[in-house]
Amino acid sequence: MEKLLEVKNLKTYFTLKSENFGVKPEVVKAVNDLSFEVNKGEILGIVGESGCGKSTLGKTILKLNHKSGGEILYNGSEIFDLSDKDLKDLRKKMQMVFQDPFSSLNPRKKVGSLLAQPMKIHNMGTKEEIEAKIDKIMEEVGINPVYKGRFPHQFSGGQRQRIGIARALMLDPEFIICDEAVSALDVSIQAQVLNLLLDLHDKYKFTYIFIAHDLAVVEFISTRILVMYLGKIVESADKNELVKDHLHPYTKALFDAFPVTDPKGRENREPVLMGDVPSPINPPSGCHFHPRCPRVMDKCRLEYPPLKEVSPGHKVACWLYE
Ligand code: SF4
Image: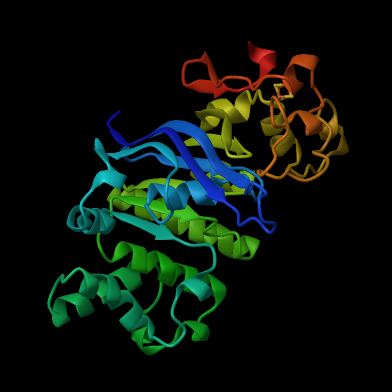
């Protein structure tokens, strides 16, 4: 398969302001030495609890955050080395759909104006062409174009997210990052928006990175899944392989947290995860998951396990699979 995006040893660190004079400022390692690839046309799901760094990763890939190290190659070119003009051209191809459509849409602008904005910024099309594009895209996302004179607050949450998706489509992108794009929606509306994203993928062959904390959502839409914990990838595999044979105790805990209708289905399950994700300012020594891991060993407290390929395309960072 043809690679679209290569992320190599990417780091995004944030230095916190020190409250006390002479005290070394603390550093949050939000993305800590990640490497992965995204192939053209695939849907890569990234899952992990809140605070694991997945949204920071998405924003860094689009250069909406700084990077502290590593490389992000899009079609072979380092995004952070592009000139302003080349970056502006690339931004047409790379779009983002945010979690909260209400705060990502300007409440004082009508929907038609919000959708026209990306084409105007990039000097694309005449007034008539922009209007025709708005009508076409609104129909494609399931919103009647007669409503383009309405304000965002006059739509439901699901409709607003459809408008957020429409805005991402206005520039005919090839790569879209959906950051918790359905997390704020009711479950029935989530399914509609996920199906819309899949229909658009079938039609336009977009490449997606789909970021979410809900494994069920990621499993539904993705073709391949990365599991993140405290800024690092702990497991990655093809979706079907991961569902069948999840290896890392953290991934097992995420799968085992799925509700079951039959209590017998709880047999052989790992205990449900205890406690919160530790602070990325001062992560636990060795394997960062060790304070919550039911399979912890002495070695786990001392050394971080490398991300190792255990079968073709299936990688895991855990000393159980040395
Ligand atoms: Fe658990 Fe050790 Fe594996 Fe970390 S390396 S997930 S602590 S068994």
